[in-house]
Amino acid sequence: MPYFRITCPELRPENIQAVATRLTDEANRLFANSHMTSEELRSRTTVHFMSYHDGQLFIGGQTPVERQSADVTLEVSDWGMSVKQQA
Image 1 (cartoon, rainbow, N blue to C red):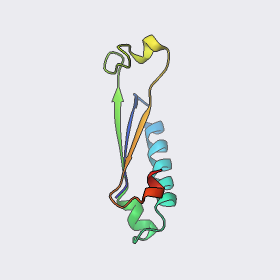
Image 2 (cartoon, rainbow, N blue to C red):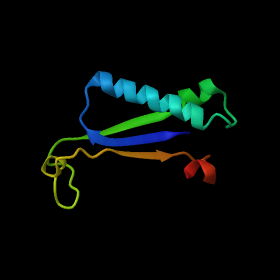
Image 3 (cartoon, rainbow, N blue to C red):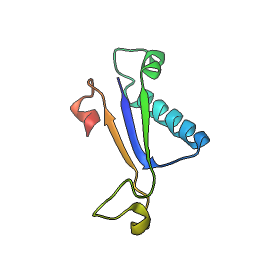
Image 4 (cartoon, helix red, strand yellow):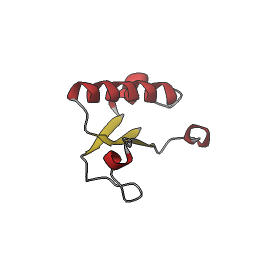
């Protein structure tokens, strides 16, 4: 099943919900040719937020505040992804 893990600065609850909904919609679009119905796929798509505060994430030894740039990472995994989908 599609699993999304997002590492990002802390977000407001309404923004978290909006991002989760958008990613679930995109998973439905991307994985539409799978053996599941759209509703089955939607009900099995997981979006996991890993929020960080300043001093908890470092890139090149610096925090995003020191770098003056927020860092956002999106990891996607699904056992059924084809090579084309992975690309």
